[in-house]
Length: 302
Image 1 (cartoon, rainbow, N blue to C red):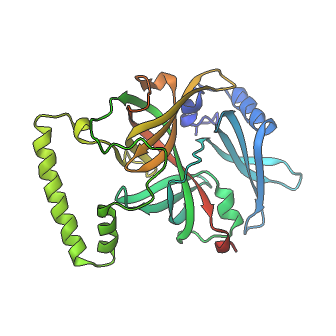
Image 2 (image 1 turned 90 degrees about the vertical axis):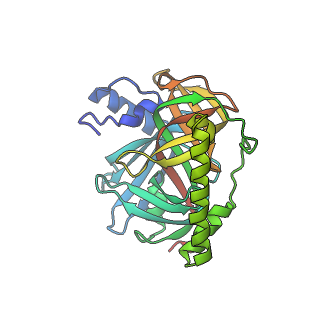
Image 3 (image 1 turned 180 degrees about the vertical axis):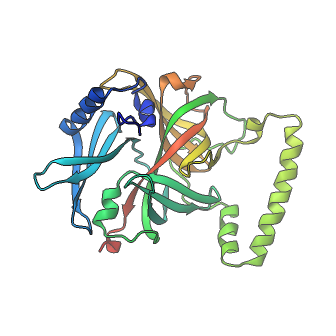
C-alpha cells in the first residue's frame, strides 16, 4: 500500500488509474455511505474492531477494516478489494495466522484435490475475532475461495472427455487424494502407490509432450506462484462468466466462475487486462491473489 493508500489489486475491480489522496478519500466515503454490511466486535485487547463492506459491482467491492475510538470514529487500519464466491470450496480444518505486514490474517487448509496446503487472505477476519479462536490452531470450517487477477488470458478447452464444466464442486477425494491422506497417517502401501503413480504419470507426460502442447496435456492446474504465499497460477475451466461495470469509474470487469482441480473459485479481472474473450468451455490461465471467506461451525465458538 502506497502513501496514497492505493492497493495494487484495486485495478482488478476497475480502478486502473492512479488515485490521489483526495480520490482515495472519496472512495472510502462512498464505501461507508453505501455499505452493504457493517460488523463490529470487541477484541481480547478491548478495542472495537469493525469491518465495513461496500460494493462497486455485484459481489465485488472493498472492505474497510479498523477500530472505533471512544467518539465512535473509525480509524482505518487497512482495506482490500474483494470478490465473493457463494459456492463452498472446502469443508475442512482451517488455521489462521496474523500477517506480519498488517493486522490482517491469512488462512491455511490442506486440500487433497490439489495435493498441497492452500493459503489465502482472510476476507472476514471479524468472524475470527468474534469467535475468540486461537491463532495457528485448526478449526473445522466451510471455506469459500475467490481471487483477483491483474493479468490473464483465455485459452481453448481440451478434448478431454473428463473435463468437468458442472457448477458444483467435487467435495469427495480423488484416489490420489485418498492415498495422500493415508500416506500422511503412515500407510506404507499408500506411499508406494504415490511414488509409482508419479513415475508412471511422468513417463506418460514426457511422451505426450513430444507431439502435444503442454496445455493440451494439462487440463487444469492450481499451484503457488511468486514470493507471496497467497499468490497462485491457475488454469481453470470457465463454467460461467459475466461482464459488469464499476459503478464509480465505469470500467468493465470480467467475473469468471472457474473449476480447477475440482475446486470452484470466483475471480475477477479488469477487461483491459485479459487477452481473449471468455466463454463457457474455454479456459482461463492467469495469476491470482487468493482470498477466502470462512464460515465456522457454531459449536466451536467460545
